[in-house]
Image (cartoon, rainbow, N blue to C red):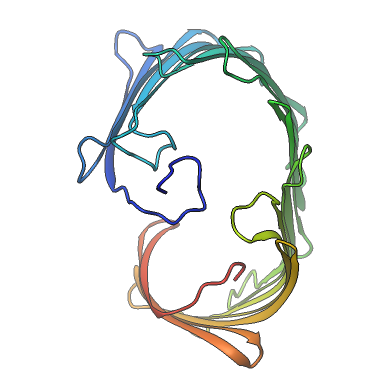
Length: 364
Protein backbone atom coordinates (compact mmCIF):
# COMPACT_ATOMS: atom_id res chain seq x y z
CA UNK A 1 0.00 0.00 0.00
CA UNK A 2 1.31 3.43 -0.89
CA UNK A 3 1.57 6.40 1.44
CA UNK A 4 -1.55 7.86 -0.16
CA UNK A 5 -3.85 4.78 -0.30
CA UNK A 6 -6.34 4.31 -3.12
CA UNK A 7 -5.11 7.36 -5.03
CA UNK A 8 -1.46 6.93 -6.05
CA UNK A 9 -1.07 3.35 -7.28
CA UNK A 10 2.30 4.13 -8.87
CA UNK A 11 4.04 4.88 -5.57
CA UNK A 12 6.46 2.38 -4.08
CA UNK A 13 4.93 0.05 -1.47
CA UNK A 14 5.45 1.17 2.10
CA UNK A 15 3.58 -1.52 4.05
CA UNK A 16 2.57 -5.17 3.74
CA UNK A 17 -0.46 -7.12 4.89
CA UNK A 18 -0.35 -10.79 5.89
CA UNK A 19 -3.74 -12.13 6.90
CA UNK A 20 -5.75 -15.28 7.52
CA UNK A 21 -9.43 -15.73 6.70
CA UNK A 22 -12.21 -18.21 7.38
CA UNK A 23 -15.55 -18.54 5.59
CA UNK A 24 -18.75 -20.34 6.57
CA UNK A 25 -21.75 -21.15 4.41
CA UNK A 26 -24.78 -22.95 5.80
CA UNK A 27 -28.36 -23.87 4.93
CA UNK A 28 -30.65 -24.38 7.96
CA UNK A 29 -32.37 -27.80 7.79
CA UNK A 30 -35.72 -26.22 8.58
CA UNK A 31 -35.30 -23.60 5.81
CA UNK A 32 -33.81 -25.28 2.71
CA UNK A 33 -34.40 -22.14 0.61
CA UNK A 34 -32.19 -19.98 2.83
CA UNK A 35 -28.40 -19.82 2.51
CA UNK A 36 -26.33 -17.87 5.05
CA UNK A 37 -22.70 -16.90 4.48
CA UNK A 38 -20.11 -15.19 6.65
CA UNK A 39 -16.39 -14.48 6.44
CA UNK A 40 -13.84 -13.00 8.81
CA UNK A 41 -10.28 -11.95 7.99
CA UNK A 42 -7.59 -10.54 10.28
CA UNK A 43 -4.00 -9.47 9.91
CA UNK A 44 -1.74 -11.98 11.63
CA UNK A 45 0.33 -9.25 13.30
CA UNK A 46 -2.11 -6.32 13.68
CA UNK A 47 -5.42 -7.46 15.15
CA UNK A 48 -7.05 -4.07 14.51
CA UNK A 49 -6.67 -4.62 10.75
CA UNK A 50 -9.61 -6.83 9.83
CA UNK A 51 -12.53 -7.45 7.50
CA UNK A 52 -15.87 -9.14 8.09
CA UNK A 53 -19.02 -9.68 6.09
CA UNK A 54 -22.30 -11.54 6.46
CA UNK A 55 -24.91 -12.27 3.82
CA UNK A 56 -27.99 -14.30 3.04
CA UNK A 57 -29.80 -15.58 -0.07
CA UNK A 58 -33.41 -16.71 -0.09
CA UNK A 59 -35.14 -18.51 -2.98
CA UNK A 60 -38.58 -16.89 -3.04
CA UNK A 61 -39.86 -18.81 -6.06
CA UNK A 62 -38.56 -20.76 -9.01
CA UNK A 63 -35.88 -18.55 -10.55
CA UNK A 64 -36.33 -15.67 -8.09
CA UNK A 65 -34.29 -14.80 -5.04
CA UNK A 66 -33.74 -12.04 -2.53
CA UNK A 67 -30.30 -11.33 -1.15
CA UNK A 68 -28.56 -9.09 1.37
CA UNK A 69 -24.95 -8.49 2.34
CA UNK A 70 -23.10 -6.23 4.74
CA UNK A 71 -19.33 -5.79 4.91
CA UNK A 72 -17.01 -4.01 7.30
CA UNK A 73 -13.40 -3.49 6.30
CA UNK A 74 -10.41 -1.50 7.60
CA UNK A 75 -9.59 -0.10 4.17
CA UNK A 76 -10.47 2.51 1.57
CA UNK A 77 -8.50 0.90 -1.23
CA UNK A 78 -9.92 -2.62 -1.23
CA UNK A 79 -9.29 -6.15 -0.08
CA UNK A 80 -5.48 -5.97 -0.08
CA UNK A 81 -5.04 -2.62 1.64
CA UNK A 82 -5.98 -3.26 5.28
CA UNK A 83 -5.19 -0.20 7.39
CA UNK A 84 -6.30 0.46 11.00
CA UNK A 85 -6.74 4.18 10.22
CA UNK A 86 -9.54 3.45 7.74
CA UNK A 87 -13.05 2.07 8.20
CA UNK A 88 -15.72 1.40 5.61
CA UNK A 89 -19.16 -0.19 5.79
CA UNK A 90 -21.05 -1.34 2.71
CA UNK A 91 -24.54 -2.85 2.42
CA UNK A 92 -26.39 -4.27 -0.57
CA UNK A 93 -30.01 -5.44 -0.74
CA UNK A 94 -31.53 -6.82 -3.90
CA UNK A 95 -34.01 -9.00 -5.75
CA UNK A 96 -33.20 -11.05 -8.83
CA UNK A 97 -35.79 -12.89 -10.90
CA UNK A 98 -35.52 -15.14 -13.95
CA UNK A 99 -38.59 -14.43 -16.06
CA UNK A 100 -37.44 -16.81 -18.80
CA UNK A 101 -34.68 -19.42 -19.01
CA UNK A 102 -31.40 -17.48 -19.24
CA UNK A 103 -33.10 -14.09 -18.73
CA UNK A 104 -33.26 -12.23 -15.43
CA UNK A 105 -34.05 -8.80 -14.01
CA UNK A 106 -32.54 -7.36 -10.83
CA UNK A 107 -33.05 -4.35 -8.60
CA UNK A 108 -30.47 -3.49 -5.98
CA UNK A 109 -30.03 -0.90 -3.23
CA UNK A 110 -26.45 -0.15 -2.21
CA UNK A 111 -25.31 1.86 0.79
CA UNK A 112 -21.74 2.77 1.64
CA UNK A 113 -20.73 3.80 5.16
CA UNK A 114 -24.22 3.29 6.57
CA UNK A 115 -23.37 5.10 9.81
CA UNK A 116 -23.20 8.40 7.99
CA UNK A 117 -25.24 7.33 5.00
CA UNK A 118 -23.08 9.55 2.84
CA UNK A 119 -23.38 7.48 -0.32
CA UNK A 120 -26.46 5.52 -1.36
CA UNK A 121 -27.19 4.18 -4.82
CA UNK A 122 -29.97 2.31 -6.59
CA UNK A 123 -29.23 -0.06 -9.48
CA UNK A 124 -31.62 -1.80 -11.85
CA UNK A 125 -30.80 -3.96 -14.82
CA UNK A 126 -31.49 -6.86 -17.14
CA UNK A 127 -29.37 -9.90 -17.92
CA UNK A 128 -30.26 -12.11 -20.87
CA UNK A 129 -28.83 -15.25 -22.46
CA UNK A 130 -30.30 -16.82 -25.57
CA UNK A 131 -29.33 -20.22 -26.97
CA UNK A 132 -29.86 -19.64 -30.67
CA UNK A 133 -28.98 -23.24 -31.47
CA UNK A 134 -26.96 -26.03 -29.91
CA UNK A 135 -23.52 -24.61 -29.18
CA UNK A 136 -24.39 -20.99 -30.01
CA UNK A 137 -25.30 -18.54 -27.23
CA UNK A 138 -25.92 -14.81 -27.25
CA UNK A 139 -25.87 -12.65 -24.12
CA UNK A 140 -26.73 -9.06 -23.25
CA UNK A 141 -27.13 -6.93 -20.16
CA UNK A 142 -27.94 -3.37 -19.21
CA UNK A 143 -27.45 -1.68 -15.83
CA UNK A 144 -28.35 1.80 -14.63
CA UNK A 145 -26.84 3.22 -11.46
CA UNK A 146 -28.25 6.36 -9.82
CA UNK A 147 -27.35 8.19 -6.58
CA UNK A 148 -30.08 8.65 -3.99
CA UNK A 149 -28.44 11.79 -2.58
CA UNK A 150 -26.11 14.54 -3.71
CA UNK A 151 -22.44 13.85 -4.28
CA UNK A 152 -22.76 10.74 -6.44
CA UNK A 153 -22.68 10.14 -10.17
CA UNK A 154 -24.93 8.21 -12.53
CA UNK A 155 -23.56 5.34 -14.59
CA UNK A 156 -24.81 3.19 -17.44
CA UNK A 157 -23.36 -0.12 -18.60
CA UNK A 158 -24.29 -2.06 -21.76
CA UNK A 159 -22.80 -5.45 -22.64
CA UNK A 160 -23.20 -7.96 -25.43
CA UNK A 161 -21.54 -11.27 -26.20
CA UNK A 162 -21.62 -14.47 -28.21
CA UNK A 163 -20.17 -17.95 -27.72
CA UNK A 164 -19.73 -20.58 -30.43
CA UNK A 165 -18.93 -24.11 -29.22
CA UNK A 166 -21.14 -26.27 -31.40
CA UNK A 167 -18.53 -27.32 -33.96
CA UNK A 168 -16.03 -30.07 -33.14
CA UNK A 169 -13.25 -28.34 -35.11
CA UNK A 170 -13.49 -24.74 -33.87
CA UNK A 171 -14.77 -22.49 -31.10
CA UNK A 172 -15.03 -18.75 -30.69
CA UNK A 173 -16.24 -15.95 -28.45
CA UNK A 174 -17.09 -12.26 -28.80
CA UNK A 175 -17.80 -9.66 -26.12
CA UNK A 176 -18.35 -5.89 -26.11
CA UNK A 177 -19.03 -3.48 -23.24
CA UNK A 178 -19.86 0.20 -23.04
CA UNK A 179 -19.60 2.27 -19.85
CA UNK A 180 -20.73 5.83 -19.23
CA UNK A 181 -19.93 7.20 -15.79
CA UNK A 182 -19.94 10.89 -15.01
CA UNK A 183 -19.54 11.81 -18.67
CA UNK A 184 -16.49 9.57 -19.20
CA UNK A 185 -17.29 6.97 -21.86
CA UNK A 186 -15.29 3.77 -22.14
CA UNK A 187 -15.53 0.73 -24.41
CA UNK A 188 -14.11 -2.75 -23.96
CA UNK A 189 -14.03 -5.63 -26.43
CA UNK A 190 -12.63 -9.14 -26.67
CA UNK A 191 -12.49 -11.86 -29.30
CA UNK A 192 -11.20 -15.42 -29.11
CA UNK A 193 -10.88 -18.15 -31.73
CA UNK A 194 -9.45 -21.65 -31.81
CA UNK A 195 -9.43 -24.13 -34.69
CA UNK A 196 -8.09 -27.65 -35.02
CA UNK A 197 -6.23 -27.74 -38.33
CA UNK A 198 -5.26 -31.42 -38.06
CA UNK A 199 -4.90 -34.10 -35.40
CA UNK A 200 -1.57 -32.51 -34.35
CA UNK A 201 -1.99 -28.83 -35.28
CA UNK A 202 -4.18 -26.11 -33.73
CA UNK A 203 -4.57 -22.37 -34.34
CA UNK A 204 -5.23 -20.15 -31.32
CA UNK A 205 -5.95 -16.44 -31.13
CA UNK A 206 -7.39 -13.88 -28.77
CA UNK A 207 -7.51 -10.11 -28.41
CA UNK A 208 -8.74 -7.62 -25.81
CA UNK A 209 -9.12 -3.87 -26.22
CA UNK A 210 -10.15 -1.00 -23.95
CA UNK A 211 -10.49 2.68 -24.89
CA UNK A 212 -11.59 5.80 -23.06
CA UNK A 213 -13.68 7.67 -25.64
CA UNK A 214 -13.38 11.03 -23.91
CA UNK A 215 -9.59 10.79 -23.63
CA UNK A 216 -6.51 9.12 -25.05
CA UNK A 217 -6.16 6.26 -22.56
CA UNK A 218 -6.11 2.90 -24.37
CA UNK A 219 -5.07 -0.71 -23.77
CA UNK A 220 -4.76 -3.65 -26.18
CA UNK A 221 -3.38 -7.19 -26.12
CA UNK A 222 -3.44 -9.57 -29.11
CA UNK A 223 -1.96 -13.06 -29.35
CA UNK A 224 -1.94 -15.38 -32.37
CA UNK A 225 -0.34 -18.80 -32.27
CA UNK A 226 0.10 -22.20 -33.89
CA UNK A 227 0.40 -25.18 -31.54
CA UNK A 228 1.81 -28.52 -32.72
CA UNK A 229 1.53 -31.61 -30.55
CA UNK A 230 2.21 -35.26 -31.29
CA UNK A 231 -1.18 -36.69 -30.46
CA UNK A 232 -0.20 -40.36 -30.22
CA UNK A 233 3.51 -40.30 -29.28
CA UNK A 234 3.68 -37.07 -27.23
CA UNK A 235 7.47 -36.62 -27.32
CA UNK A 236 7.61 -33.32 -29.20
CA UNK A 237 5.50 -30.20 -28.65
CA UNK A 238 5.94 -26.79 -30.24
CA UNK A 239 4.27 -23.39 -30.13
CA UNK A 240 4.91 -20.37 -32.35
CA UNK A 241 3.25 -17.15 -31.21
CA UNK A 242 3.00 -13.49 -32.17
CA UNK A 243 1.98 -10.97 -29.52
CA UNK A 244 1.08 -7.30 -29.84
CA UNK A 245 0.81 -4.97 -26.84
CA UNK A 246 -0.29 -1.36 -26.75
CA UNK A 247 -0.63 0.99 -23.77
CA UNK A 248 -1.34 4.72 -23.85
CA UNK A 249 -2.02 7.04 -20.94
CA UNK A 250 -1.02 10.69 -21.33
CA UNK A 251 -1.86 11.26 -17.65
CA UNK A 252 0.52 8.56 -16.42
CA UNK A 253 2.51 9.55 -13.35
CA UNK A 254 5.71 8.00 -14.69
CA UNK A 255 7.61 9.29 -17.71
CA UNK A 256 6.27 6.67 -20.17
CA UNK A 257 3.00 7.80 -21.74
CA UNK A 258 2.81 5.37 -24.68
CA UNK A 259 4.30 1.94 -25.33
CA UNK A 260 3.82 -0.47 -28.25
CA UNK A 261 5.52 -3.86 -28.49
CA UNK A 262 5.71 -6.60 -31.14
CA UNK A 263 6.90 -9.94 -29.74
CA UNK A 264 7.64 -13.20 -31.56
CA UNK A 265 7.89 -16.37 -29.48
CA UNK A 266 9.06 -19.89 -30.21
CA UNK A 267 8.61 -22.72 -27.68
CA UNK A 268 9.85 -26.29 -28.09
CA UNK A 269 9.39 -29.21 -25.69
CA UNK A 270 11.09 -32.64 -26.01
CA UNK A 271 10.77 -35.73 -23.81
CA UNK A 272 13.81 -37.96 -24.54
CA UNK A 273 12.81 -40.40 -21.77
CA UNK A 274 9.84 -40.92 -19.49
CA UNK A 275 11.13 -38.90 -16.47
CA UNK A 276 12.96 -36.12 -18.38
CA UNK A 277 11.46 -33.14 -20.24
CA UNK A 278 13.57 -30.47 -21.97
CA UNK A 279 12.08 -27.11 -22.97
CA UNK A 280 13.56 -24.27 -24.99
CA UNK A 281 12.23 -20.75 -25.63
CA UNK A 282 13.44 -18.09 -28.04
CA UNK A 283 11.82 -14.68 -28.40
CA UNK A 284 12.44 -11.33 -29.99
CA UNK A 285 10.69 -8.04 -29.40
CA UNK A 286 10.60 -4.55 -30.85
CA UNK A 287 9.31 -1.72 -28.65
CA UNK A 288 8.51 1.89 -29.53
CA UNK A 289 6.87 4.59 -27.47
CA UNK A 290 7.02 8.00 -25.89
CA UNK A 291 8.46 9.21 -22.61
CA UNK A 292 6.84 12.60 -22.40
CA UNK A 293 7.84 14.50 -25.57
CA UNK A 294 10.72 12.10 -26.35
CA UNK A 295 10.22 9.09 -28.63
CA UNK A 296 12.20 5.89 -28.03
CA UNK A 297 12.82 2.49 -29.65
CA UNK A 298 14.13 -0.72 -28.07
CA UNK A 299 14.94 -4.20 -29.35
CA UNK A 300 15.94 -7.28 -27.38
CA UNK A 301 16.01 -11.08 -27.55
CA UNK A 302 15.36 -13.82 -25.01
CA UNK A 303 16.80 -17.34 -24.80
CA UNK A 304 15.67 -19.78 -22.11
CA UNK A 305 16.29 -23.45 -21.31
CA UNK A 306 14.42 -25.53 -18.75
CA UNK A 307 14.75 -29.17 -17.75
CA UNK A 308 12.39 -31.11 -15.49
CA UNK A 309 13.17 -34.53 -14.07
CA UNK A 310 10.63 -36.77 -12.29
CA UNK A 311 12.20 -38.20 -9.13
CA UNK A 312 9.02 -40.18 -8.42
CA UNK A 313 5.56 -40.32 -9.94
CA UNK A 314 4.67 -37.25 -7.83
CA UNK A 315 7.89 -35.29 -7.20
CA UNK A 316 10.02 -33.52 -9.83
CA UNK A 317 13.05 -31.22 -9.92
CA UNK A 318 13.60 -28.38 -12.39
CA UNK A 319 16.48 -26.17 -13.53
CA UNK A 320 15.89 -22.96 -15.51
CA UNK A 321 18.39 -20.68 -17.25
CA UNK A 322 17.54 -17.46 -19.11
CA UNK A 323 19.36 -14.69 -20.94
CA UNK A 324 18.21 -11.38 -22.40
CA UNK A 325 20.24 -9.55 -25.05
CA UNK A 326 19.58 -5.95 -25.95
CA UNK A 327 22.07 -6.28 -28.82
CA UNK A 328 22.74 -9.97 -29.50
CA UNK A 329 25.16 -11.33 -28.41
CA UNK A 330 26.28 -8.25 -26.42
CA UNK A 331 24.69 -6.44 -23.45
CA UNK A 332 23.44 -9.64 -21.88
CA UNK A 333 21.60 -10.21 -18.61
CA UNK A 334 21.40 -13.73 -17.18
CA UNK A 335 19.09 -15.60 -14.84
CA UNK A 336 19.43 -19.00 -13.16
CA UNK A 337 16.93 -20.74 -10.92
CA UNK A 338 15.76 -24.11 -9.62
CA UNK A 339 12.42 -25.49 -8.52
CA UNK A 340 10.83 -28.53 -6.93
CA UNK A 341 7.31 -29.64 -7.78
CA UNK A 342 4.81 -32.07 -6.33
CA UNK A 343 1.70 -33.58 -7.90
CA UNK A 344 -1.01 -33.19 -5.27
CA UNK A 345 -3.77 -34.80 -7.32
CA UNK A 346 -5.16 -35.17 -10.81
CA UNK A 347 -4.24 -32.02 -12.78
CA UNK A 348 -2.98 -30.27 -9.63
CA UNK A 349 0.74 -29.54 -9.23
CA UNK A 350 2.39 -27.35 -6.58
CA UNK A 351 5.90 -25.99 -7.18
CA UNK A 352 8.30 -23.65 -5.38
CA UNK A 353 11.47 -22.19 -6.82
CA UNK A 354 14.29 -19.76 -6.23
CA UNK A 355 16.30 -17.61 -8.61
CA UNK A 356 19.97 -17.37 -7.64
CA UNK A 357 20.15 -14.31 -9.89
CA UNK A 358 17.97 -12.85 -12.61
CA UNK A 359 16.57 -9.78 -14.37
CA UNK A 360 13.34 -7.90 -14.95
CA UNK A 361 11.78 -7.18 -18.33
CA UNK A 362 8.41 -5.58 -19.10
CA UNK A 363 7.35 -8.03 -21.84
CA UNK A 364 9.57 -11.11 -21.32
